[in-house]
Image (cartoon, rainbow, N blue to C red):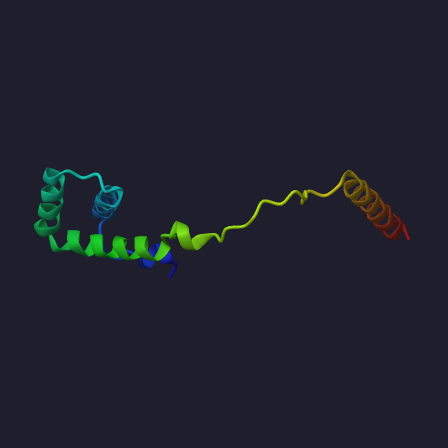
Length: 108
């Protein structure tokens, strides 16, 4: 069973989508008091709503990345990390040589 199959297993997709919608609104931090009351009412309307919200909240928490912990600060470097034109030229010669070798080996 893949993760898509067991996350929210047994919960109707429509309710999962509603839970995700509520979760993203809550996470934005821009919900009015009326919206928060609607959310609480939605949670209390059906045990499946709360179950879906808890499932999606767990996934959200496990997959979210804290910006301050995700990438260490580095100093900008003046060095270019891109390969030089000579590197690409050498690769094309090697490719042609390997193709020619393969053709010759195929003929023999």
